[in-house]
Length: 144
Image 1 (cartoon, rainbow, N blue to C red):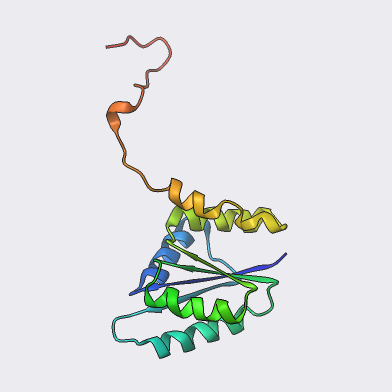
Image 2 (tube, one colour; image 1 turned 60 degrees about the horizontal axis):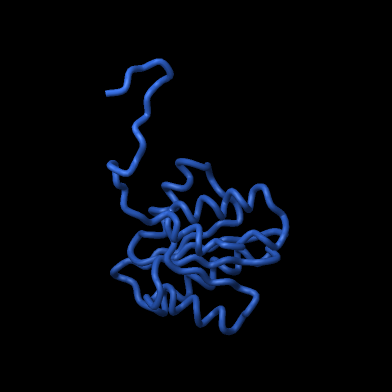
C-alpha cells in the first residue's frame, strides 16, 4: 500500500523537522511539507495544503501530521479530513514519531503502518534521570 505523507506546522516547523529527518534518513518520496509562516493566513495555508494533497494524490492513503492539536494547521487539515475520511490526521508530531513512520513505510506494505503511532510519539517524551541508570562498567573493571 503506497502512503503519502504531508507534514504541516506553525512557522517553519514542518520544513525544520523534515530537515532533521532527511539528515538522518535521507530524502523522502511521496512526502510534502507545508509551513505556516507568520506572514501567512488560513486561506493561503489551505491553498498550499490543497496543492500538496494533489501532488500526493496517486497514493492509496495519505497521512497528515501536524505540530499541535487545535492550531491553524490542524484546523485546516481537520476540515479536509472531514470532507475526505480516507485522509488520516495525526497531531503532536515529534521527530521520533516521524522516523518510526518513515521506517515502517519503507519496510511494511500492509495496513499496520500507523498502528500505535501516537503511542510511539508519546514514548519519545520524557525526563532523563542519570541517577536512575545503572552504571556501565567494562568486564574486568573494578567498581568504584
